[in-house]
Length: 342
Image (cartoon, rainbow, N blue to C red):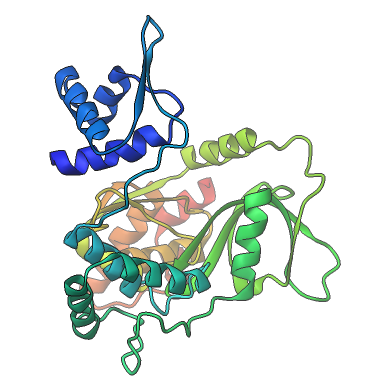
């Protein structure tokens, strides 16, 4: 981090704390003691009055009623904010109405030259989902589903909720919300069902009513739920490593309840884990079809022996020009024996 950026960040760091020490600054910014002292001197020269406290528990604090200097954005920071806004247009985001006021505030903070550059970028850069006939950054025609904001508000108050999946349904589903995510312009909710003790994923459009659960089952706490989920992950019998092409294939199509663990900042490599019921012929058949769809960039780290045998037989039959269907399973004695064992 450059000195100017570090000092600017340090100003906001110390202003958000009632008390801080040199050691904390050294650790936070990965700098030496002498550099931390010089930076503090520069902070004071910029108009932030600091009060020093001596003794073993001493340190520094900002004097009450101190006013921070006006925030200034570098050219790169302005473009980063602006492009982030452009890239998220027409994606049905929560808190969308606030984006207009945020944009106006940012534009009011920057110079005319910076504004001209942003106008050019707005005419030159286009992202997936952008309305090509009206690329105005303040175009707010992508209002999200009403359930999205209601769900977020409810989760901020409590993650134990009651869901109703149809207007006529009288029985509610007691759940613990895990996460919300957007995939292919659809918002999905992943939750833990307190009754079935299973993790489920549904589209928020399937939810008709949301309530905070006033009395969740006593045996369930956040810690116990997460431990339950972790224990089930240990039972997973499939682990794949996906490189760039396989990740792209995954994004094109994957079963509804599958998700990836990305292993790099650019989301070009990932780990995939799941549990396949090897006693279910249809599930094995479907999983192998999907596994082949991922292509050569998919590396198998763990897979049940049953799937290996079926996959090997599939390849042999394919090379021989023989189509394999579910009835063909009974023609292969070794595979049938493994199914019986399961």
